[in-house]
Image 1 (cartoon, helix red, strand yellow):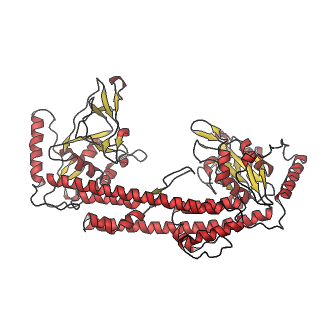
Image 2: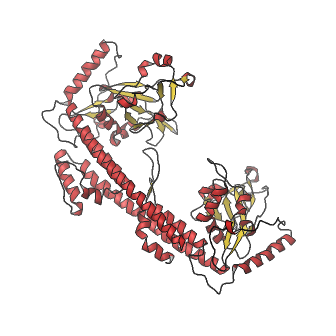
Image 3: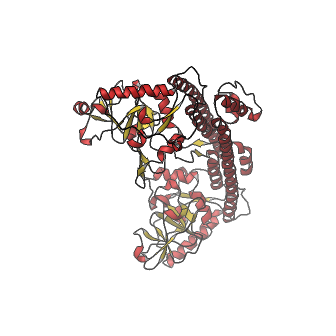
Length: 607
């Protein structure tokens, strides 16, 4: 099977095999990797360097003749004192060869494929080539800097010229590899972070570049590199690697075919991304018809139309259900599932997820009882009296509420407490009193065993007001400027405090609900629309953002009757569970696709 046939036969596999990326924070982008197309690119390179991408031509002069001419050229360079005579390299053993090469090919060490052009310290202006100016996708040097000799970094030493292959030996997994295809002026000098290889005549730099990016050479580098957090290979390890050499004419045919197929991969990648964008737009558009509904009745009608998008049966139009037709045709990506979750949460806090019951006590009565409870707490000297919070303006109300609901502020329906600045010298071991820090909190779950720190019983006794209790809502208050990686929230469960006592550290906040369902209040706090309002009140430095206690206390939120809060929480839990089930099914299907793609790759290389 030719490479073109391999691509076209499995084109659906290449374009549909997606790998989820591990990203953090609400502001993360590119949460997917086009794994199938990535593996196809690797396969093309691997077939190329194994001599399986283009047919061999028996009329080509064998690579052995090329090696003879290289030996003559190398001897001339030594005689002319352009290079020094080096120690003879160890003979390549059969065990070193990662695959059998075709007839007419030869194996050599990289050190025998070219020469190092030496080093010099700049004395005039020069073109500095460092790792940062490598366009690794195109394999070229892009926009290098021109520096004066006085500004030369200590690493600016290696001489390069047109036709030189440069390979970054620092963090080689980044594949910062390039061929210098231009005559740079002033003279170019590269960083010592590169291994320099200027190929001998007859060896195409473009072929060597593609071999250095192939899975075979990547595997070799991984086997000899040192370091974990900051891996690297030295020049000796790099030049000890081996290189398959095709005949001269075949090198150029291989490069041309690789370029042709990589262009096809670019087109597949662009089409796949465009398909995702179009699908996401469709998801957003159709889900918007749900959030734009005026009430539960209109939501039900919109949901029926939503179900009929592909002429499918609408199912039960009286409530949102996990109809297979919707999930089969639209909710087929992680993005769609997450957007559906956000739609559910938005509908919940807008009073559109469940119908209102006219027999419910209005929220105004609930707020009166909460106000009375706070007054009693003040009289009992359990809390201090606070100034009345400012009236909510129309600008703070992003949507209309159903009859019986009210806008209020977080500070009106809860008790707020900021964390205590525990000092590291107070930390203890073998204690049952754990300090909860920002790193322990992620959206919806505790990381209680993530770098836990503890305090003594004496410190705990002196800071009892910062003790966390069941049903508390915990908020993080610091994060990255411009990203939604703060204001993470979670509700404390009984199981969280059954085995240890928890105390709140600084830059965290306790929201302790008063006669309000803590799960409903947590849903409100997580809502993207309401989060947009409070993020506008963040302060901080260029990199760090903070939300103050005053901003949280004055956060405008919608409140229904207590009975409707319970109904909403029940319905949300039901629907989110269904979303999670769909996501698990997507993950399982994705894993199957990954295994299938890897299997096709392995089979293609086995012939």
